Image 1 (cartoon, rainbow, N blue to C red):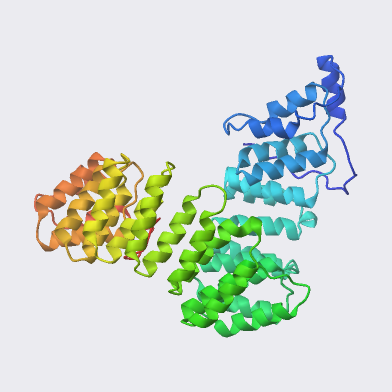
Image 2 (cartoon, rainbow, N blue to C red; image 1 turned 180 degrees about the vertical axis):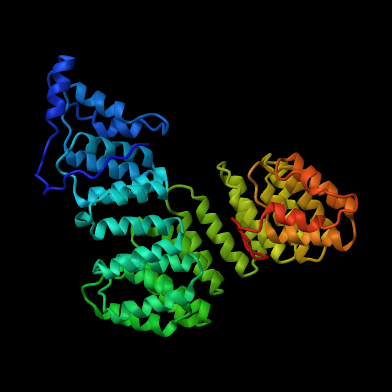
Length: 492
């Protein structure tokens, strides 16, 4: 996709309308502007045109050729809507169109959004090329922030750090947003030492936080188990009458206390959190709070919130995931099975995350017969058979020390796998190591044939001699060591 150079950035003129294009298109089509149907707007037309492979510009051109007007503010709203629904290609097409027709209300913020869209549609390479076309005197906080966000979203740590350092040198760190981006990136990449360093830097800079920054920092304190730092921040925020704390703030504080083993303080934070939940946030808030009450071992609180949750309008599988997860943490198998029965009986909207959550829970407790029953239900009742189901069982048998069964379940996982599948590394390595330890070369070759038949590796390339020397290592290496998952980790 061709991206255009940055055009003139001028002060916005209120209520500017694209008249030049309208005049010429009306002359060509022989139409004259007519009153708008209030139910037929450009935004509605674009919202309905959801095919990502089709050009959205034909909808815009058609609107103008009918003699309709387009305000720049309306295009801004349309781009915002398209980004909200992840229709990034269409949003970039509108941004391209604005640039091509030299809409003279293109602001620095518009260009920053354009950079973000190019990164999402064309990749980081295209975004970098576009950034390099922007004259130095035009570069500002918004543009650097957009580039920083692009690197952070793809977890390109070294480049994000470079941009962050440049922003420091240029004096573009006047607000908290870049710090929030880097905090989240360091958390996601496991760089907890850098999290602590950045938290100290924010304190030294005496940056006045907004509620988003407060919640980000509380989460960071929780990750690095810095209870003292968290409490100081919370006390400072509570004393700031201009800062309105929300339910998430106290929920994050509760999570930190739970991890630190301070159950009573955690419960105090959870009660404060509940008091701040409004009607619009109840669904998500109850899901989060059920999980935290479960981690705190408060079964009665989990059931109390579950009762409130079920009274909300609509049906949400995410609620079942939250309550089942919470009850599994407290070993309430009877409660889990009862709620699972309610889900099966009362709702037709299938969500494989729920039975998978149950299989993982049973496997962790060594209840392999129960886990097998859920897997059988998936295959027999719902006619669903996924690689992940059998990998979970294989991992469960591995943890239970039943490697023969682990190998059989892993073979089944390979049989139903799809192109591009990446195996659970603990299962992969433990199964081939077990077979190699038994000198079961024939079984290793069968697995190799299965992997080859499913298109994952080449049998002829790897099976280089009749003795199978190094065959175990070759299988593991061929399947890749990336995306390593710790033993017992739940993949919902």
